[in-house]
Image (cartoon, rainbow, N blue to C red):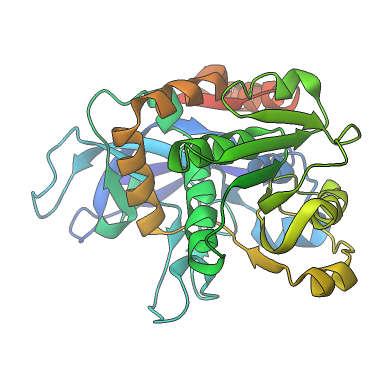
Length: 341
């Protein structure tokens, strides 16, 4: 069959390419239904990745957050129409000590490897996770982002000490919101404090114990463990502020991506015996854990509905461009695409 792939060929310009795909394979065929735009997609779309990276990565189909429906299973094990979330990370080997999302041989969709903006996706069976009936499709579209927070939490729990009375989350955006929400559901007896720059964003964090603007933090605050969800140049100030307020031998989980190296106060990391935990992307186990968590905590999904910002029905390439342009000006939440092209 001929599959249409909608690739970014240069900043703000998409073209349709055609790929001949055979159904005589082991791939499960998925029709994308709801997609979500990530900040990484926007860096490619606007050309902010730099000339070298753009030349190396393009042309490429964007989007690595999304769900779809099964249209064909060669083994007839998955019923046609089954709703699934797609896993963008694609490993080609296994390592006993290294997770699939850290293996240098793994490929990641919409990062040098075609993403989900296609008529059909041909995926390995272990790259999809079935979704329960009735789960909100707009929220499900950005499950991949939720798995980032879940993956960071799993790594935190494996590497940090057991005193977890007070958590601090730096970042008032989407990832900070999701991380704080998971922490309050996972540790209902613990205090969760969110630190951010924008009061109108902090106002959305009604479920946490405290919120503070980063230039108005009370002097007596002390936290056991912290999660950094700022990214960019701001991650430098966020991490250094965490180092100031964290109790000795606590842990800092770093999630925010920065294009450039940042300077952090290593002297105080040493003095306080702080554990720094880095995490990036996620793997199949994180998707399974996240879907189970959403099934067990329906109120968690309701709160996530607050993150649904713009919703765009896409039927043409111009609709794709319109969705990306509107997302640039969005001040809160996730832009969701109803993929009907």
